[in-house]
Length: 307
Image 1 (cartoon, rainbow, N blue to C red):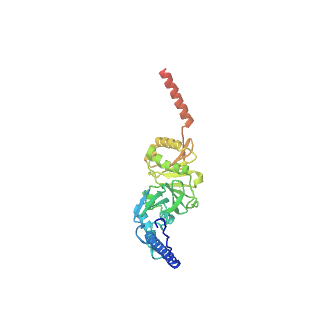
Image 2 (image 1 turned 90 degrees about the vertical axis):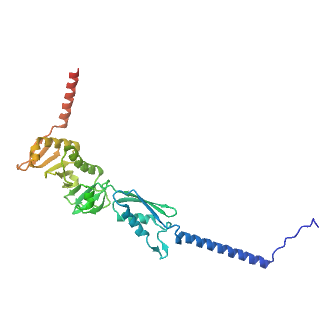
Image 3 (image 1 turned 45 degrees about the vertical axis):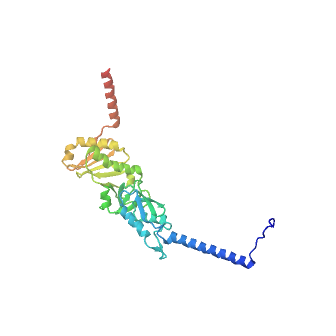
C-alpha cells in the first residue's frame, strides 16, 4: 500500500479548453489595462507636461520674448485632445526654427529635454559688428561679415550697439545670409574709429563712406566737420602716424575749423585742403626708412657716449 504511487488526475478535455481560454482572456485584459495606463501616462496625464523652461546664453535678447515665442508653439492641443506641452511630443527642431525665424540675431539654438517635465534652451547670439548702407537699405553684419537682417539706420538697434554705418555709394546689392565683408576688412574699419579716438583724441561720426568696398577708399567725418580719407592698402598704424603729424603741423587750422579734409591715401604724403584755399596742399611725411635710420644713428651715438 505504501509502495503504491498515486495517479495524477487529469482534467477533462472540455475543462482544459475553458481554462486555457480564460487565461488568454485574462492576459488580453491585463495587456489592455497596461497599454491604456501607458498611453494615459504618456499623453493625457500631466506627468510629462512641460512645466519648466530654462533659457541661457542670451545677451542682448531678453529671456521673456524668447519664452513667449516657445510658449506660443507649445500652446494648444493636437487633434483637439493631446496637449502640445507634452515633453515626448515637443519637436525640438520646430522650436529651434521658430526661435531663429523670430529673432534674426540668434545664430543657433540647442534644446535639451529634461525628463519628466523640463526644457533647456541654450541661445547662441550673433555678435553685431557693423552696419552697411547700400541701395537705400541698412544691413546689419555679424562678426563673420554676414548680413542677417535689415534695420533702420536711425533705429534703436543701431544706436544701442553704437554701430559704424558704412555707406556704399555704388549701391552694391547685399544678400542676406552670405558673407559680404571679410573679417580683416571689418577689423580695419572698426580700428579706424578706435585708433582715432584713443590715440589722437578726435571725435568722429559713426557714418563712414566709400565709393565702393573694392576700392579700399574709406572716408570718415570728424566732430569738427572735416573729413579724413583712408586707404585700406596702407597699414593703419602708418596712417595714424601721418595723421598725428598733420594734426601737429596744422593745429591752428584744425582748431579754427578751417580744414576741409586730410587725405592719407598716399603712403608718405599727406594731401589736405583748407576752406580758404581753392587748391589742395601737400605735406611731406617722414618716410619710415628715414625714421628707422634716425633711430639707428641715435643708438650708435648712445653706444659711443657710453664707451
